[in-house]
Image (cartoon, rainbow, N blue to C red; front, top):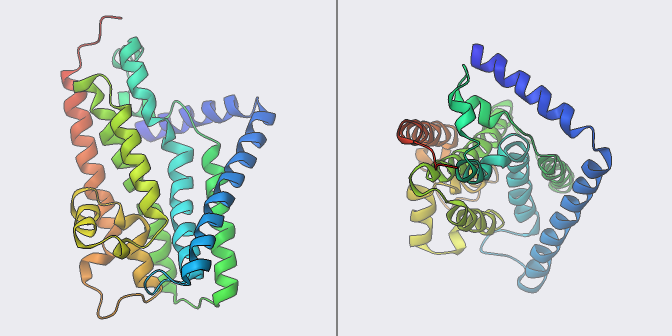
Length: 264
């Protein structure tokens, strides 16, 4: 509970810092909206020329994209600054977290928020509402609960992947290049159904870098895209998020214990 209270206080300080620059906030939001509009236009052009991708039409793909934007928005607001760890370790500023009477992770994760995540979340929300109106989605309460859980789980999976990547700095000093590759890879595959990439790709994004659980498997279930019965494990986005967070916490803890500073 103490760490939660501290995290809340850190977030409050970060928010107060951000609201001092209102123009920067609104320019950032607008730029994110424009970027996502371009991405959606590219998907639209692809569908216009090929009509469908497998069994996925334009509205299915917009649902897939909106699903990802909702979870990415949550991740972006609270955890986008994971990549800052590299510079903190190189400069030696991370050392300050180790001498304060508070969890180094709580201090690190609470040090900043990103307004760009707000733009992503708005895009996801507007896209989802638009798809709902166009397709007439009629879900049960159970499906709505599953959807909300999977949006939160998707945000946590993205956070865990970045947490693991950032924690590698404790061994390598620099890991942002690897994190950038993982980010680009994730962005590419979240915009399209995983099954169009082939069997081995599906295995990789399911078992090794389980980003298919961010939006693809939940969308298959919610949009009834499976050709047969859906295997039970494809509903496991919340379980995968917990396992990924546990792995990330383990790697972080090991890294902090071995960290001895860079001498700067």
